[in-house]
Amino acid sequence: YEHLEAACATHRGDPRLAPLLDPALERAASLRHDLAALERLGYADATAILPATQRYVDDLVACAASPATLIGHHYTRYLGDLSGGQIIGTLMRRHHGLDEGLSFYHFDVAKPKVYKDEYRANLDALPLTDDERGEAVDAAVAAFDLNSRVFAELGELVPLKA
Image (cartoon, rainbow, N blue to C red; front, side, top):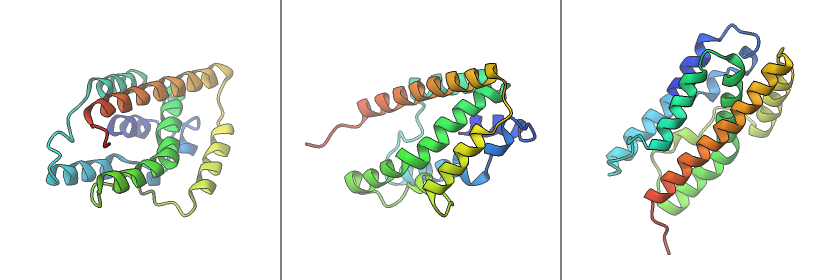
């Protein structure tokens, strides 16, 4: 998130990306807060960088200069967090008994569905060339795959309860 948010900040004035940028979506600060809380709760390896996470970061760094590829990453991360992330937060509370370390999953938006619909409308209206649209879609597919690999590695670390 730090890399994604820093890359987006460098393109804040670019009309191909600017309509999607909203501080209410940014997660880096809440993630740092949650990781510190999890470490206090005894999850000493909460800040460990997994190989899949590093591959994800490397991909973000490689595409940071391109607003089109950032669009794909932005869409995948933040709309995914607004959608599935809400479910993950609930499951973390229910299955792991966590009350702390879950601020990442709280977005300061009144109605998530309305917000996501507006985001998609802004996405559809971006002034992109056909090639840039293709780059954005390719980046979204890559980001989804990279994210899936992160969750797969995390799943190997957390034993399932019977």
